[in-house]
Length: 303
Ligand code: 13P
Image (cartoon, rainbow, N blue to C red; front, side, top):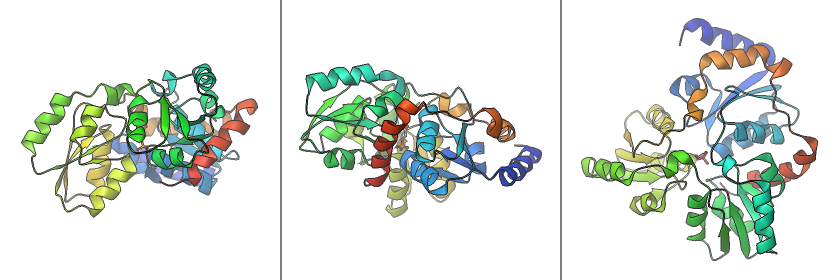
């Protein structure tokens, strides 16, 4: 990245009282300029805690919306305005209302990778870091879980509660090819296999640990292993290599979210230049009140 862009970003950040938040899947150049890099839960908690004047979010739409819900006084700008999430699109609020009719009495726990409309109909949101704890905390023995089928199936295998799971999925994780993982395991037989719970269950069966991205970092920190096969979006490899230069990491396969790759330093600069004026995330007031309750619950439980 040209020094001029980096310097200009630093200058405008100060001038605007801005912070840059980046998910661990973001391209390396973005991770390098971010004030905070983290998983979905960590970034939500940081947005709520910092209440910066301007938050430049480097990630996808639902993450910036969640930051805005938790920090309504901040102007929150998604650096790459077109970055969205196929998983969030895979379940509508009408789908949830149908499920509620079929399962009266079951509370809805909704993965934060979801639309505002879906959040507004939910008892609580969760991330991969606290999904099991949120389901356990729900005040009903039966729980409606969506939109991610793989995460829901994994949670169901860890709890005595009965889950009614929506069959949605992340195109990047769901499309992973088990042959790629097996090949890596044959090449790196000494490595630990860490897999994100959005992955297909056949991946989870091969894993030494099933973890969200923050959990992967904590696992590597405390592990004695020198090599790791990582079953999640490939941006995570840069994050791990930066944090642990003395360990080795390889992707379990081609798990690539194009939308996560849309952010560039140039777009961050543009957002800083224009953010206060015209690009802030707006939450319709009829959704804000109910959706904020669901995401606040999420930030208070476990993880
Ligand atoms: P984390 O909960 O680890 O941030 O995962 C986010 C995500 O979107 C996975 O695809």
